[in-house]
Image (cartoon, rainbow, N blue to C red; front, side, top):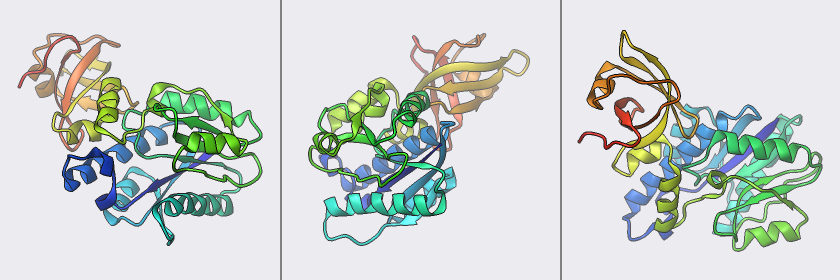
Length: 277
């Protein structure tokens, strides 16, 4: 079983490379990204706990409500030291409190993360005695660093962290695209949207649009549930079903849907059809 540390910087300073978006918009998106990432990670059966290391009160409140443990970020002299210091602090806290768990560090800017892709990598890493990591989609960074069976995590996040982790002896692991697609730029965000993002990011981009598969449907009530691509299961009622113009839903059927800020489905239809305005 794994304990994953996710560092979250102050939202006011987050995602500066998403310019020309205004700072408040970047902060909203950064928080949505980490909400979707934590939601997907907590659903993995291999994950026993998530420790979020942050100095941002808004991020702490929202992520604690999802089930993450919050740890205050330690002081550090600069941004790079702060990132790795936060990860080390969380890893040391995890090792002291839950020594039976192996520790890893996951970046929080993975709005497309699929639970099954994370689970596959965690199972593979559990078979390795030493450290391992997953590179990002761009090929120079790292989205996931996993610690050894015995010993420190030794994070090398920052510029060209893929090479840094490889030089430090960590084994590179193959992973699905959603575990590698972090979001630093608008081009990254477009790539994540093509993969499909979680409910929080979908809402914050102003569309509230997602895709998933029908998990259940009751013809009598015209309600049921949809399994989103990030592993989240959401209910829908007759009003949402009727809004999309469907007459019947089949289990496993691919659908497009719109949800509000609370995660309530307001309309769904076939994935090949447009949703009503």
